[in-house]
Image (tube, rainbow, N blue to C red; front, side, top):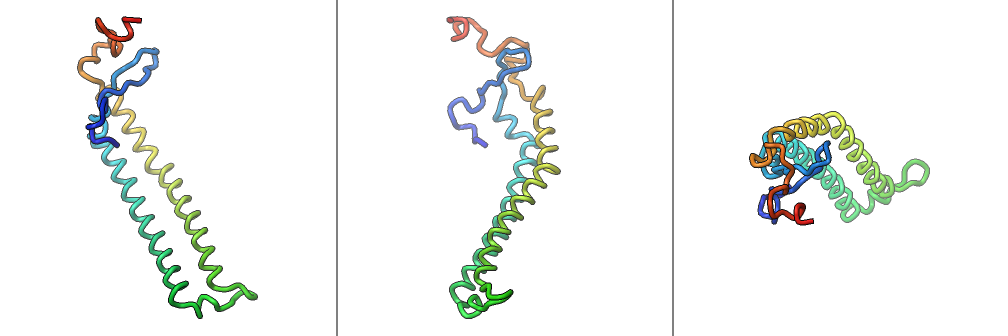
Length: 145
């Protein structure tokens, strides 16, 4: 997401279905309620998943550092608890990935479709709403070629 200060931030073009370039106002899309809802939900999920993941990792590091006797205890036929705790980090990564993919399919994808549908007619630049391709005016690069 840009803040609109980058050169050309609001002037990006995309190909329309008819092959003509159409100006899309990306800054207006980023400011739309649909897009803000999508990014807010994604950021919320990432913040919660990160907090849980880092919390579990900090517990593991704390146990490995300060509870060496406990972590050296063997269970399940000679497997140390430290090894099981380390493998829990791998499973945590898989669980977070699975949760994100599930959330993306069930929640983020419908929101993305709503953003795309709203962006179609609503966020075209006023000057380009006439249907003229972007850059088709006199003195443009396209007419100079």
